Image 1 (tube, rainbow, N blue to C red):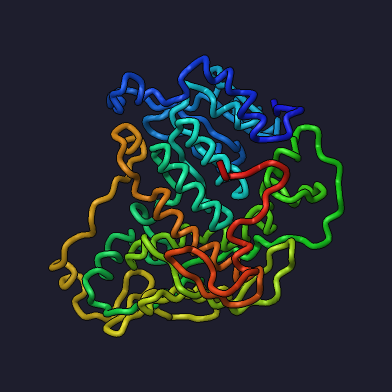
Image 2 (image 1 turned 135 degrees about the vertical axis):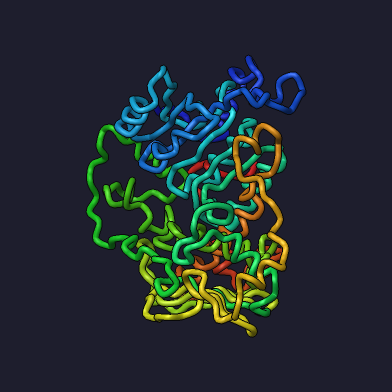
Length: 425
C-alpha cells in the first residue's frame, strides 16, 4: 500500500533510516567482501511498475521476482497473481528498495519516474534494469549516471538492438552494419535516415488530447504518487497507463516511445557513444504546451559532419538508410557497393560486448548498453524533444551538455520537480 502522511522524499529516507540500520542494504554478492555470486546462484528481482511492460519482463533467465510495486492496486493484484509464491507487494517504491533480499530493481514505470527510482535504487545498493527512454530530461540522465557510478552499480537500459535481433527494416542485426561503417567502404561523413521509408514507424498515434475534462480518481489508483515529480494536472484516464506518452510531463510521444530503440544502434555504429550532436534542426508545427503533437523532420548534426535525419512524414521511398560519399546502404542490407559481402569479410568484426545481464551483475562487468552510452542515446531523444517543445533549432555543447546561448532550452535540461522530489543528493 502507498505510504501516507509523508510528503517529503527526504523525510521518508530519514524515517526509514532506523529500519535500514537493522540490516545491511546491499545485494548478496557483496556480502563477505567477495564481490562475486556463484554461477549457480539465482538473482532476485523487484519490479516497479506492473503494467504491460513490467509484466512482460517477469521471466528472465537466471532471475526470480520477489517483490512488486505499483500505485494501481488492480495492476498490483494482477501482477502478484501472475508471480505467486508469496511475492511481496508495495505501493511505494521507497519501501521496496530497502529489501535486503533484492539484487536487481527493474524500473518499468512511465519515463517521468525512471531517473528518480533508478538513482534511489543505486543508492540503496541495487543493480538496475531500466526501461526506455532512460530519462525524461538530459539533466536526469546526468544525475542517474553519477548515482550509478558513485555507488558501483550495474545498469542495463532495456533496448537491445545494438547487440541482438534483426534491426527493424534492415533485416539484419546491427553487427554487420557496424562492421560496414567501421570498414570505411561507405566513406565519411555519413547520413542516416530513420523513418517509414527505411523501415521505422514513429508511432504518431501517441499524441495527447487538449480537451480533457477533470474526472474523479478511481479508488484503486494513488494518482498523487503516479504523478510524483510531474506537475499537478487534474486526473483524466487519458493521462495515465496506456496513453501517458502523449503528454510532455510524462514522455514525448512517438519519439519518446521509440527513439532509443531506433537511435541507440545508430549512435553505436557511428561510434558516437561518448559524444552528442552539436545541433538539432526541426521542421514541425507548433506544439501544444501540454499535449505532444507530430513533426515532419528532425536533423541532428555532429561536429564531424555526420547526420541523423528523422523522417516523420515517411513520404520518401527507395531511399538509403545510410549514405556516404563512397556508397549507400538500403533497407534489407542492400548496397550499391559491388561484392559487398566479400569485401566485408576482409575486415575485423566489431569489439565483443557483454550482452547477458545476469553475467554482468554476477561478474561486475559493464553491460553492453549501460548508464554512459544509454545517457548519450537518450540525449538524442531529449535534444529532439527540447527543439520540438520550443519550436526552434538548437545548438548544443556535447562536452558540457548544455545548449549554446539559449536560456529557454537550458531550462529544459533540469526541469523543476513537484513538491520535494529531487535527484540532487
